[in-house]
Image 1 (tube, each protein chain N blue to C red):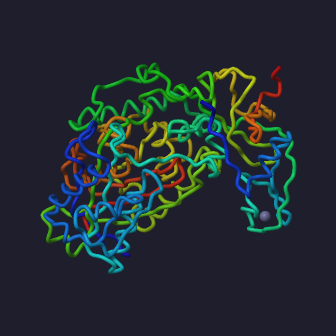
Image 2: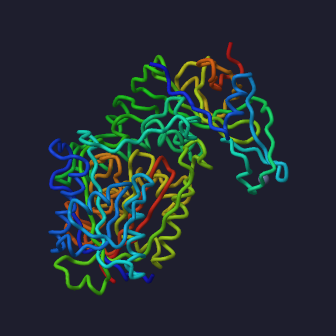
Image 3: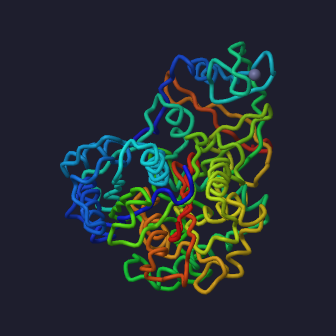
Length: 135
Length: 379
Ligand SMILES: [Zn+2]
């Protein structure tokens, strides 16, 4: 059983194309310069339609998480963390933390992370995050 | 709309609660509706407004032979019923309808003809949350709490204390699902569902339903039941994606809804004799106490450390046992409203002596919505 994978829409296609190409693409507003996520063709801060797509640094910190202990064969060996990270550019996103024990001792809030792209099939690559000091 | 202009004149839950394999989700709505109609001594023909989540009010009306002049099918999750009460009060005050029936029914445990809620893969939740393993409330509602605990200086034991206090109330309630007293140690050592939450920190999964009937305060005097007046209310939403919640230590929807409820009712926190804060998970009463302004950020833990919301405490809260110990069919808001009405009628199993004002606060869809009602038994 594979994990549930996203079906891109016209508003989000660039993000998933970016992940496939190894880039974490964010959007930002030209007039107010704020970054935002998830994708949309206008700025959620000032409603301007003048926005641009740009590659983010891929750096993030761990904002919060849970460790699921219920069976999820599609996600793999449980327990597994479901996390929300704060990107260096400001926006937050949900993800999984890899290359790291799935324990409260190893998963420390505010720890530095970086993006790791994980292809799921020919079309979809998911952005996961790993500790910066992970092997 | 002025405080006290609209009243609850009918209120009832399903005949049974907990395990009800003989009724579908729609059947639970109808069982509760018939009980509420009997409570108010009304016939379906007397009802001219209906509310419930999604397609349910349409089904309820057609099954009972009600001809609605007003419908509200708001579905923002478990607090939808607080919003239905608020919207119905405004509609009655505006003259759109006279007697509104609000119903809820959910076959949460038996899953007899249940409603289905799953994120579509092309929705924003389906693209940006579901791929990482979110699928049920315990993998989403729970995600903010480690940030709350760290920033607010609280601990997992504080979550456990919420569950312990709720069980103390449930022990006094014959209709509660879990009535055996528990302890912080027992809750902490129970199986993990989603760290940091153990099983007793998560809501029950049960079958049940409830219904309310609202009308004008003027007409309420002619009913057999003691009127429970609506003094004020509030509602709000944030984003349906938990990862987009602007601050994991406080709910914007809670703050806006609560502020509106206090302002419209004209009451102060000291006026609240009885409190319901929707507890789908043990952290929600902590957020609720802070975001509704009962204490400063970070101080809610002391309510539980000092047993202030427990039986005999200064602020009785979740007196039916709550979603953790009373029942939780999936959308618990209706049961919180029912307990507020019982307390103000003086008919609760664990009755708060001389309760005059009850504040009932609901949360919906993983912190994405909130609704708050201030009730009183004095117009
Ligand atoms: Zn802007």
